[in-house]
Length: 279
Ligand code: AMP
Image (cartoon, rainbow, N blue to C red; front, side, top):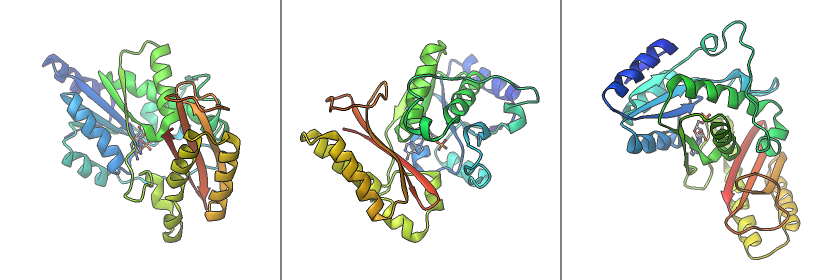
């Protein structure tokens, strides 16, 4: 597996593949890789001749009181995992490369970024949209792979690629889960042993809400009951639990078959967990 730490050598590496007629897949990450990230790599390997994975803990997408400083950084472990999945290149830009002195541009996507995590984490999606735009323009892949685990992020990126005519196809990948249903996340390692036993309640609650909504129970009653249930099980705060249109992410007051997605964000102690499912 090749390693690139600057844009010029990355572009030379990608250009050499292209000169051979090979297609390029791209998986952007913040590292601390788990099986969820690695399923994106597997999917990219299936669909493209070459796969570039980036690891960059993007300061612009963390709020002032969030976990940027304590976010896990384990590049050598990550590199070993990527090698076992036959990734072709690891791109490791530094903060100075991504945001050199004088950097003063931001990408803002409207609409889909406004509610949910956008409301709870001001500035987060500007940070995401800005870094993903830069990474896509640096790597210039044919296809880029994003997890449904971060559903609002996926929709934001699909929007920006469409609106800015970026020549890349965005491939969504279903959420990888632990056996007990907990969505894999780099942040799960913050959970204490006790919190870890409570965490699967998030997915169970989503499934329970979905079946009640499908069977016609009133949305508000279902969602209010579910929030109370999460708090009674040990979650400390529910940022949101909403039924949304799966493309616009507008809040739905009624169930729309084939277009309804349930999304949740809740704190277990200091750790903020998110999840979502198709209804
Ligand atoms: P992150 O490192 O958290 O920024 O995530 C990098 C990519 O991996 C994003 O596209 C995420 O949506 C995706 N991802 C993270 N966790 C999972 C998961 N459990 N299943 C599928 N994709 C995931």
